[in-house]
Length: 252
Image 1: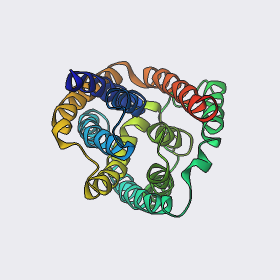
Image 2: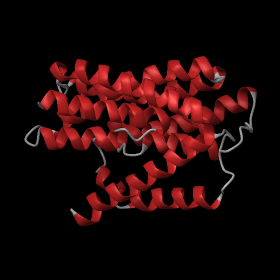
Image 3: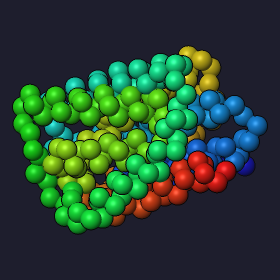
Image 4: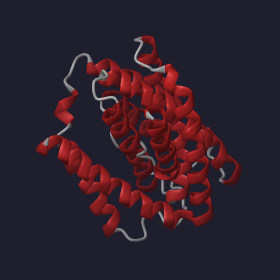
């Protein structure tokens, strides 16, 4: 029964994650509720062992239908991996709970800005080309990769927003690009958790398969319905993140 519950949660998380990120909102609470006595690090590591596969498959699916800017994406992915490792190291020096109270406010500002700019992310008009695009993308990857390694919640949403606002992408192309960077940041986190023995491999396979199935469904929905649909899901996910992080910070 426990395997069934977390597998279904992983499927739904993969679906949401493939569209706009935020699958952790679904899978992590499911893991904590199903295994209340488990070490948090083990549940985080097990979550990463599933979500990385769905994100990787989403990247492949998007690359078949969307023109991926590989010349800027690859440096961004490498920078994201490095940033995530630095962020994970920084956790050992600074208490990440300092970010906890600021996160709901940051997400609320992001949501208000997106709602106020009704045309934001509806058209695809990249602002940069060549080396400059690669440098800007790498800066995004490094910064948000650091955040992912240091704290984590909402990483996918922050990546999508950064690509929309800073790079001039529409929500569909931004989500596609964000996936590869997210694979890199998840990989570094997974390696760290695995090295420390914080992954339940007996759950990982079933959860990974479920996450991939959900990812394939989510990717198809995003590609079929386009940037407007991804924008709507983005707004819903960010709203859910605000509620979840505000509850965790101020009410729990």
